[in-house]
Length: 145
Image (tube, rainbow, N blue to C red; front, side, top):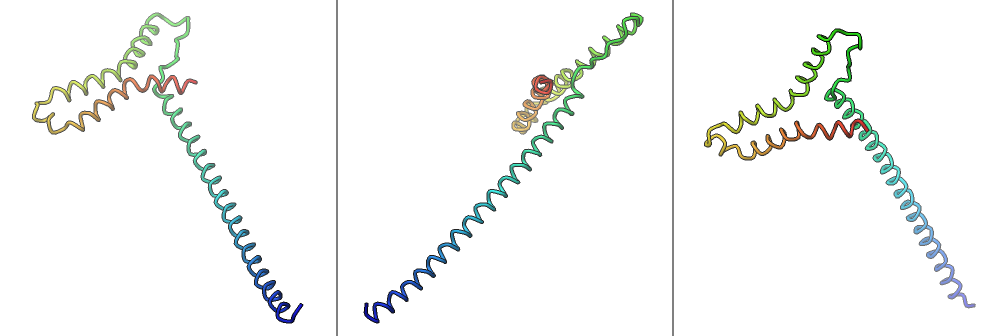
């Protein structure tokens, strides 16, 4: 081996070693970065899960107020109490449909020139009324499960 070959191989080994060390550092940093992103994604998923659970609990609590009462007067109660309970329960169940029907009658009996300028608002209102009246029935079924 000549002196020049020895110097070239020594320089090549130093350069190759430096490049290899640099690549190792880059790969280690990339691995750390990937692990960090994964941890951040896991924390965000846990936060979203907690928010979803909180929303479901709030929804369930909100639906408790729309359910029909399960109150039954005692069997030994006078007939007037049974009739009073039946009347209150009927009024309670009719409030939502009467509110929706009244709102619809109010909106749809406006003069044509008033209705013409409010097409998008009337569409939104109609959807809200339908959801208010019909959508809560499905919600009660979902909340009961």
